[in-house]
Length: 292
Image 1 (cartoon, rainbow, N blue to C red):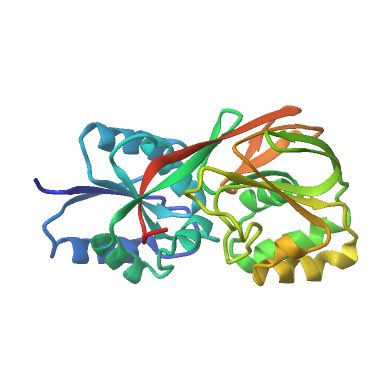
Image 2 (image 1 turned 90 degrees about the horizontal axis):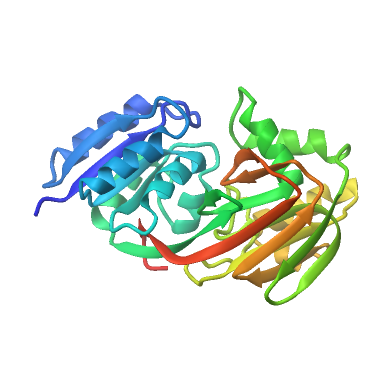
């Protein structure tokens, strides 16, 4: 039976030229035995709709051509189905692609899709929001909100926003409960990690395995402004877990009581109330990637 692949392109993600990517997809796929089609998203949530349609029509894979937000929308429509997620990174950070070992350059990523097998990964729910890589509250959520409304993208913009907000941000009081332990105190940032990074190799949870049935709660406790360089350097070196102001809890299910109204899921800003419930769903998503 001929394999069918649907490419879903977010024309607004990142800074890469999507026309160039689409032309290359057509060039490569026309030389294979795959049936393929290319769809462009027109509004928020459209990628999920297009994905569910592909699942109903027994597609082998749906490929997100975009950033982590696009990957989130496609993955949401694929959970617990036989259809696999593929990724052609075309966003600002591409955290999921980097964690899964997908080549960042689109030419290599297209070839990777054609040649690589399917593996299963975990997904999670953050209240009623789905996520595949990362969710969180605190400073990282504030930066996600600022970044989402910025006209400029890329790592330089992200770091600039961190510098602008760091010194005026007030720590958040939280109470965290898992099946293993509890934590109470003031935090600078709190990440729930299924994957390992925000994107651009900013690694917040270097110990995360995306197929182990566990999430990592990464708590950056109250820190001074002078700690910025050290924390960022530790993230880029994949050693943030060894920083004295960082605590990590591994769990399957997490509840968080807090005072914030904003959060992020896979880098996309969302509104929340004072209670958050998070749960992992082991091996619930098929993904085209190397063996994990």
